[in-house]
Image 1 (cartoon, rainbow, N blue to C red):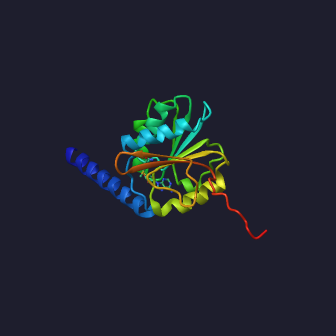
Image 2 (cartoon, helix red, strand yellow):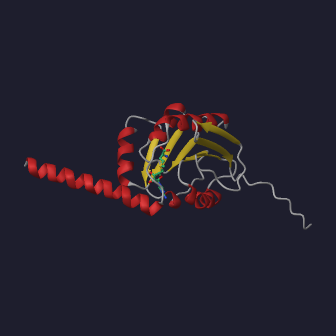
Image 3 (cartoon, protein in one colour):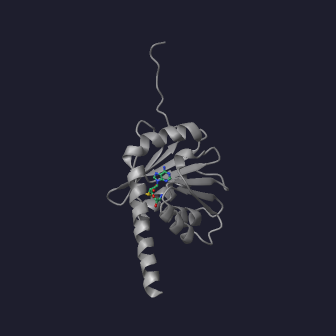
Length: 187
Ligand SMILES: C[S@@+](CC[C@H](N)C(=O)[O-])C[C@H]1O[C@@H](n2cnc3c(N)ncnc32)[C@H](O)[C@@H]1O
């Protein structure tokens, strides 16, 4: 019985590790958590954005849940939602957020989601996916909603506010669609 249980535990651990690797390869985004100093800057930017009291804040790729937990505590009146594609990370984040009444987590692909209800989007992804995420937000985010990105910036979008986190980190606030004003000089 003990041998059977330990074999099952090993198989589960291998499957869990494999699933992490597979999702990292498929999405190109590693399952790393935001650091504490980065989380503090993300929260400071969201506070500066004057969100409505009962704001809906969505973490695109909520990973192990570090950012959603901190957001739920910093904005107790808000609804904090997380979407995560990796099953293992999603399950762990469910355990971490157990008992936090203002968090809801979904297992799935954020490219298949609609963000019309969101007042704010937060993300910590990677450079290569930022153009696709920009397009996604253009399609499905209400103009005027705010977006805060940890470390990876959106190209050709106007940053409303920028904060440094530690020596390497940076967090940027955008008021979507945050397009630079283009002057059409052909008129
Ligand atoms: C760097 S982690 C950030 C985790 C968390 N937001 C934080 O700041 O602590 C990025 C997460 O995004 C997830 N991810 C990447 N592409 C995704 C997609 N298309 N749909 C849902 N989750 C995705 C990855 O699996 C990974 O866990």
